[in-house]
Amino acid sequence: MTKNKYNEYYPHCKVVHFGDDSLADSSLGIDENLLPQDIEELLFEGSGLSCCLLDYFPMLNNAKDLKKCDIVVEDKIECIMRLSSEEEQQSRGVPFQSLEDLPLYGLPNFIGLL
Image 1 (cartoon, rainbow, N blue to C red):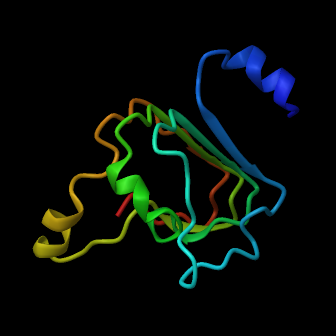
Image 2 (cartoon, rainbow, N blue to C red; image 1 turned 90 degrees about the horizontal axis):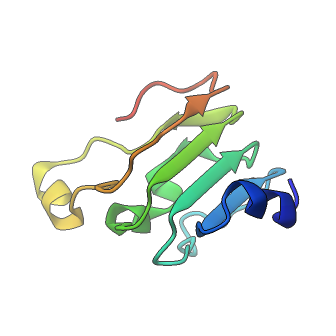
């Protein structure tokens, strides 16, 4: 979808769209993947996202403006976040506090949210 068409559907929203295997060669574990602080919507569509969403984008633990996160047609993703110790959970905070919509489909290896 081109930027102009996307803006027609979400005219006043700060949106980041990952597609076309854009995360397939990500440097996960070496460099932290960064997103704008005030992101309102994320769309992962055939981006190559694998394993766990918060492994790729740990800063989503503190995303205060994120309202919608679409994860569609991702063959490798297994979960949104990993279970962790109570200490780790307290230090990271509660992820997705403002999230209103989490469409998930086309995820053949998806196990669950945790």
